[in-house]
Image (cartoon, rainbow, N blue to C red; front, top):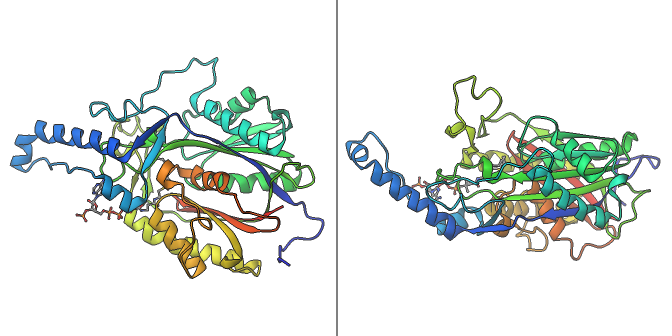
Length: 382
Ligand code: CO8
């Protein structure tokens, strides 16, 4: 018997459905590296004299072998490929969408949300709270969540929130609290991530890391859930600690502070090694303490749906938790196909890798990233 720490009358909250929108375009490591290296050759040629004089540093080639070995990434999906792989552009290009049509991240969210609603056996009109949770938003206001509420035909209220890579787990925790308190009955959490627009494709250290995607989950009371597969949320443990090791400076003060959209600081920047070394012990400590509160061991968990930033990180964490290497089934990896998709990564793994989960099986969704932030959910299959 699991010690849930709950009284028998406390509301049981479940994830009753999940959905995934996968963008149309794929970029392989080879394609990305080819355009990056063409850009580097052109840069070095244009700056030949300064490089020789020592006033400009020559840029180095990227390599597919390095990318796969250091990160586990083989491909990434993106919303707009042509500009990214053009060495003269090196960024995604989007046609502006008229204000009377759904914005691009709302379009992504609509597809993922409908997928999740179908799995949860719910209608859009059943939803009375939408949390639009992502590492970045395409505008400040009106909230993207309210636009989604409008186009989906949902009830109640909606809001945007961000905790970078932990946006999804923090939002699921908020959703569960809203259902427990009775303020909401059926909550939709969506995670539209166009990471490619936040990336500096001219930066060798980070040009390969991210991809685009959108995930969605439905959270409701166990008493209203009528889906074929649902997971009770036994616990959500959240943690944040300030760090500048993953940072993006772009904001509404950028112009006033003399900055520019194209400035390096306006893109994703990280000290990857430091992140690796500092975040892993924190995640391991948090999960171990969380499980101990429920008299559980990591080996009691049938599945670890972990944040997908780096395969070496995931393998290390799973091994440290289990005391042995995890099998592919126990700790699924989606990095090879999707790359790092910020807040959506652990939810993609959850959505795609539920085979073999049976009634009462325990599992974990855990995200970690910028902030630093960690969000860990213990789930039990209904
Ligand atoms: N090709 C070839 N060589 C390269 C390349 C490249 N592309 N890049 C670097 N190298 C070289 C380096 O120059 C270095 O060479 P040398 O040894 O001569 O100095 C060598 O390879 C090793 O470099 P690193 O030490 O940097 O390589 P690592 O093995 O540490 O791998 C990683 C780099 C993959 C970045 C790794 O450190 C990592 O994944 N760390 C964890 C990072 C992490 O988890 N970050 C969380 C990010 S997610 C997040 O928080 C979301 C924020 C919001 C996102 C918003 C969307 C954009």
